[in-house]
Amino acid sequence: MRYLRTFCCIWDTRIGCIVIGYVSGALSVACCVGSILRLFLGLPLVLQNDDAQGEFPFNPLFFVFSAAFFAFHTIASFSLIPAVKEGQGMFIVPIVVMLFIDILLDCIAITVLGMMLGRQNDIEEFLTAGVIISSILMPLLIYSVLIVISYFEEMFQQLDQVPLQKSKSQGKNETTPSNSTGDSATSFGTIV
Image (cartoon, rainbow, N blue to C red; front, side):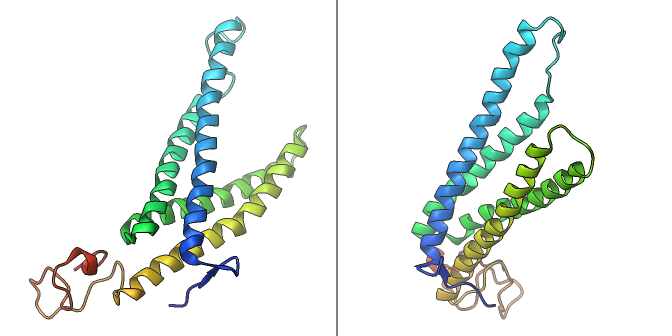
């Protein structure tokens, strides 16, 4: 498999993964805190406004879901940094999954915001800004996934192993790869 060898044409993919971990983690923390604050700041509006009759003027489940999602995203992002520094390949997989989910959610956001732009709205500027931001984020997310996957492949290629695939062992009851002694430094990441 071919993979990227550099990050921003200057650094190697290892440094790229560390940068992606810090940037993604910082953005995840900001979004998680923002979602939690929106819930807590919306609560006094409900309690003070007699016309609301105890109901939120917005759907609180949206902010609960986004806070939980960004909390998981924060954990996955910040687990990428020690995984790269210590060479633990399996701790890279959660950020790859989260980045794929981000790409999927970004595609959905572009589609929904684009469909809403087709109708007459008084928030047309907001929708246009959302489409522009999502369109800019899409290639950045794809590039981030490519960098992280490239480092993942590069790390296992240096160990002469294929990650997450069955090894070619001679016996059916064998539990370790045939070229391994069971040492965790040489056999992690291979499913037998």
